[in-house]
Length: 301
Picture (cartoon, rainbow, N blue to C red):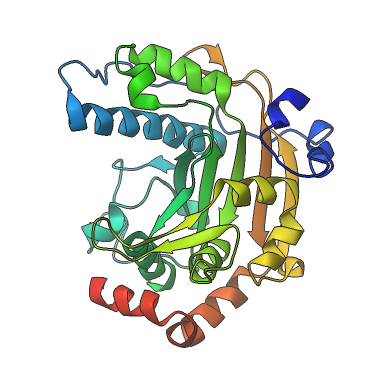
């Protein structure tokens, strides 16, 4: 299993990873996950092919997220205006479009993110503002827990290496090459977004140019550091590790995608110890602490 940890660069790269070798297995909701292979790439070329490949890769991890936790996959059902009236359509489809997996009974929203080798987790300003709307809105009886499920996979140069391959080959490659999973609360994602403004910070950066949407990046080095040294990494982003529950686990054996076993990988779960307290502070001091985020949030609502 140590060969799977070689992407971590440090003086002693295995020191922070030994815990995963003997960790408990992650409990999953579904052990047999199905990816619909009829989502063909036939006829797609150029930018459409690139987009199509990325969408299908992303869908793999949305299905995996649902397989792990259960819940409703994006597009299956809209949020309601009022949690007592579940048949009403959600009054803001712009917000609903962001949801990957929703667990209504537990007021939990999950955003699935796939990151290729050496690449960064991109956090778009607009997407973050939409989640801020959902976090502070009245769509759930209790403040929802928004979790970013970040999967580092081993598929390199997706378009170049897989443009002539079948969807089944892509699915099988992902099942055998997922390196690790980070399950991160919204409070941490907001901190990454804010810390990225510090140009001297080693694990994140900001883009505010004109070519692409404004966004923050959580670098590959930061993802690796979070996996190996979560407490230290939380501190680096200005957060108190004592405010979080941190659990190192292993993805279990015997879980399949289209009957092919998904190779086990390390899993880090990070959760707010007192989510209600964090939401209260976010609501009361958000305009002061994150003025740009809340300004964009007000434009969306």
